[in-house]
Amino acid sequence: MTKFVKTTFAAVSSPGQERKERGTLVVFADPDLRLGGATAELMGPAAELIAKSAAVAKFKGKNGTAVTVLAPADLDFDRLIVIGTGPAKDFAGLDFVTLGGAVMGKLPQGATATVLFDFAETLENPAAAAADFALGLHLRGYRFDLYKTTKKDDGESKGPAHVTIGVADPAAARRAYKSRQAIAEGVDLARDLVNEPPNVLNPEEFARRAEKLQEIGVEVDILDEKAMRKLGMRALLGVGQGSHYESRVAIMRWHGGGAKDKPIAFIGKGVCFDTGGISIKPAAGMEDMKGDMAGAACVTGLMHTLAMRKAKVNAIGAIGIVENMPDGKAQRPGDIVTSMSGQTIEIINTDAEGRLVLADVLWYVQDKFKPEFMIDLATLTGAILVALGQEHAGLFSNNDLLAERLAAAGKATGEAVWRMPLGAAYDKLIDSKFADMKNTGGRFGGSITAAQFLQRFVNDTPWAHLDIAGSGMNSLANDVNQSWGSGWGVRLLNRLVADHYEK
Ligand code: BES
Ligand code: MN
Ligand code: ZN
Image 1 (cartoon, rainbow, N blue to C red):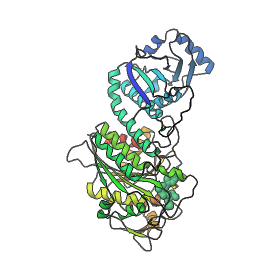
Image 2: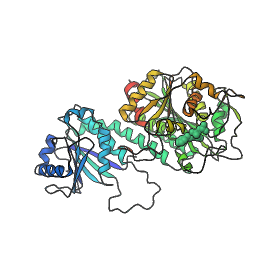
Image 3: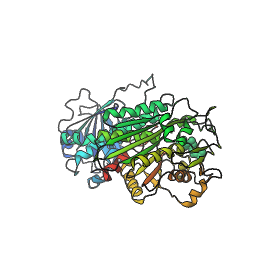
Image 4: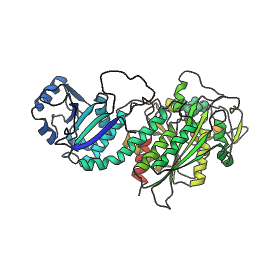
């Protein structure tokens, strides 16, 4: 993992020492075209070149702007990129992850580059900023090209990009980067899982990939169908019964806290492919339903991150992994299943399957681990796209403090959430004539009735549900993500844990 970008921290005074190719030089300029002190010294006569290029390009050093100079005279580089930072007084509020992503977006594929990250005089914690910057480079550099046998020959190097980041204190930056590398790897893992095709990432294979987390100190237990039948997880099993593959639940446990500390728990919807089942979906765009396991992918990526950075917390990741297929053995509309909780569910639409999977996993985790909180992530409803578009995930919660903390972590990481309502009037909509509840609530408020359904499997445990149908797959491209599967939620939840739940 993190195979697309190699970053090295070096002293800003001699950042090019290990350089074999000329490559790209990246420097930063404020609105007065002021460079950092060390940069100005290193640039020498090229300062005039920058001023001239800036004038031609009408470059004013504004944050989010840049000017590129090819074959710059007086410099031992093939290209020079000047990145605007805005005024120095605003540096403390700069998002250096996004900045790193933006810079990576300007580099040619496989580039060799040197960045003069010259903020030692203007930032309180330049090492943390440099580490954030490097995280942005990695996030932006991710590609999923496993199945491309012919690569475009555009004259650019196909290997990983090599970026040397010149800083005042390389050792401090390297130390700060450790936790960011854990994040980059967790996001990469989640993205890989979402992008993998459904013939490769079937439920049994997903369980094996989750099991691999054992190598980094995560305890992993896999429940197979026999074990689930014994537990009474018939809501989950009903969804998978039309599939050639066996359903699985993977329980990943990271013990980084005290022996007596209650764990925090993350639960993911892992529908490896959602045809809709007997209530089959239309053909157009159905291929996207390989991403219906983005919630489970996020939970797996998050557990990877927590373990790699040895987070001081006890955390559980539990994912329900199934494939929703039409078949002679598949579940029917009209079926009534008994969930692990004992509550019965009338199936109205076999395409409302995610909530059935989560019902049993939520109940199991609550019952077995008595967690401090449970947060579930699911590509649960198309309706959340109608309500919020792709720029916010839907947040539902029975706990204001947890909801506020999630919203704050969302703002801090750019993985934004928007709180939606819950209430008895919505809950009524899923009462059933024949069973305790039905699995759909009619045309209106589809994301809310789905959340109400989940809440029926939560007792007093603080709980939040994130509907990521718009953000986890088929994702918007931005400075830090160009991937179809965004790995959405890994950074958000890692931030939540780091800010509030570690000792
Ligand atoms: N996996 C889908 C939701 C989805 C839609 C995710 C679009 C990503 C993009 C989910 O299982 C589903 O099919 N939901 C139905 C629920 C309905 C039958 C009540 C939906 O949203 O139409
Ligand atoms: Mn569905
Ligand atoms: Zn689904």
